[in-house]
Image 1 (cartoon, rainbow over the protein chains, first blue to last red):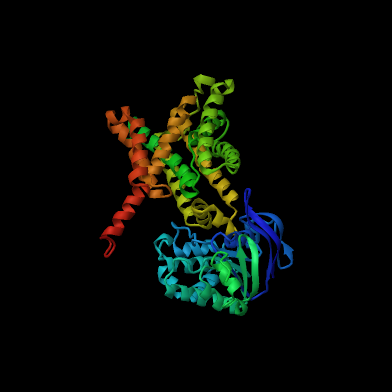
Image 2: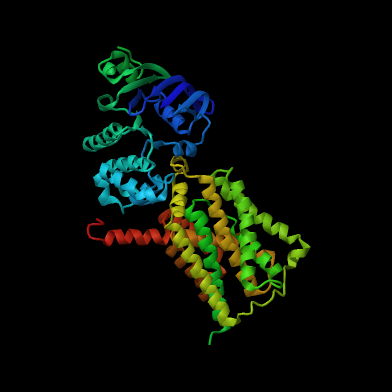
Length: 236
Length: 285
């Protein structure tokens, strides 16, 4: 479904990711791991179309989307729940969700919102609150919900658990697991090794912008090479 | 019986309300700071003055709005290529260029402006009714936009353009739409001004007008329709009722912008929202 071949991307002269290749199949959860500055978020943002690609290709459902705008990618079924949630703070939760369904037929907005509220029942009582007034956990739920309003086939999610209470992390991961079981492909960037390895099918480990290791989540558990890259290049 | 002074008050307040509602759509709803709103106001006024002799009033209002929004579209297209802070400078430049160009155009009356603009033919009460009806229409239009898909799109682009694009929102199209609609309203306000004064000069559309309108939007609360309406009415009427305020109007406006940005960035609407939150049970310390 998603194929990244020889991806090199960055910001101006700074190259964040070099010659990275991996693929994600439909219904698979793929985790991108690495220390701070390893290029995880840059990879995700390049797939979403927000970071300039200097080389390589990104293919989605057989179509080369490397040069496609973020809007075009969204229309093809790629949604992003960005780092820091980035909800529209002055809009209510309901309005944020409506905006998330922008690329869909407006008549199907209610249907999509009902599915999001089934996924995150806590949002029901917060629908008319401004997004800026939500707790961190509620914001993450709303951010995932907003991304799901577009009925994507590929969900990119950056730092699911960052700054959240364990209970809210559980809620978010349970929702992601349910979505994955429903056939959604998920590519997630995460700092919490334990949580992500419990959910992911496969793992890509980055180190200084390059591929350091790839394999199944089961292979990654307890693997000193993965742990070394995750800790910032300190190999066991 | 309504007197000339009352008609003047209604007309001036209405024109400022129209301008403030239009600028609120561009700056408040869509987050694009414009320091040249008077240029679009002036474009509408000059367009109306030129065609008022040959067209009925509704057509004059439409033509004035269309001329202003054509200029707005041009500025909007240019604005897509500049960052937010540079957009403010760019629009300020447009305001100066407008006055500079008009001053040199013989067919626009140059420095002396255009005089003998035909009467609107509505009578005093009719003109007051027109002013109030246009303000009501514009307030309703902006209220409807704010609660529509377009309003959510504007809010998304204003808050976080990159995230908006991630969700498939065409930020450029929304920015242009805000400029086109907001400047159309300014153009109609210009036509009303031309009919009201029956003569126009370039100096009536200078930088101070742009700043005055921006002050109304900032003091009212960027993005708040009722806040901007209250601020526009107050800031238009206060100088009328106090000579001191009138003499130091620009100083007052400048101080209000600074004080609002420093102590109440949400303007009147923000202050009222904060007070409501505090008096609500369990809403405050």
